[in-house]
Image (tube, rainbow, N blue to C red):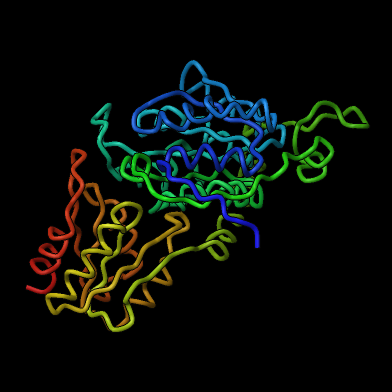
Amino acid sequence: MAEQDVKLMKGNEAIAHAAIRCGADGYFGYPITPQSEIIETLAALKPWETTGMVVLQAESEVASINMIYGGAGAGKRVLTSSSSPGVALMQEGISYMAGAELPGVFVNVQRGGPGLGTIQPSQSDYFQATRGGGNGDYNVIVLAPSSVQEMADFVDLAFELAFKYRNPAMILSDGVIGQMMEKVVLPPQKPRRTEEEVRKECPWASMGRTADRNPNIITSLELKPEIMEERNLHLQEKYRQIRENEVRFETQQCEDADYIIVSFGSAARIGEKAVELARESGLKVGLFRPITLWPFPSKQLAELCKGKKGVLVSEINAGQMVQDVRLAINGALPVEHFGRLGGIVPDPEEIVKALKEKLVK
């Protein structure tokens, strides 16, 4: 058995190492707290000297997303990263990519808002990520890591899903996971694909003129309404397939639980301790952690909650994922929300207190 490559690093650093090791062709980004270590680490590692990966600091987030659009249009494995206000600037380009059916990976290390807000952690971009922050009827595949290990693991997974469905994929992290340090097992180095392999795997890509001198046209524009409707119906069928096949979630101590805490990302780590404290006080509580925020594991959550007494959604925002939880539960049992704002990360004791006040009483 090969020796594992174990390192101690920040979540942001894990993203950078994983991008190189999974054979990414290019990274285009712009520094913003609390995710600047991603581009800093890539610059320090100099992958252009080892794997040929391009690393470029763009002049803005708008430039970054358009570089991603171009690289993805050529069938390349390209990614960018930013934090909340920066991702807001990218929304037009993400919508264009969804409309043109282009794969690309976006990392959002969330901070508090709205506006410039604070550089402290938050989870208030849930709607922006899962509802499609740009124009039109589209969805982005959204993965929510809760550890440094998942920050590394989800880079390759995001690329896999993006290319499988020709759709943008987002890793929705936050300032807690991005800045914290943990041991992480880095993936083995993959070779970058050759131009011949890219042409074979991505026959839709625009890579200059083909043998018959007819280039593939990459665009999200269509002036005829009936053709645009056909495109949209095709996209909706693709999203249905993703909802059917790509739901991911994790549960802890839910079998005998009377109450369920639903949390994602860093809030789920706090939720784990809250479950432990609640059980020590005599309450049977379990944890449900959505890993894919879109597609949201609605059916699985509804099934798990049958026979339970109540659900507390704990997230670091004013109440966003709670709407998806309420849609999933559909009034079958009480669903309450607890969150902190302004970059304040809640303590496990606060979650237990909220659970008792809102549901147990």
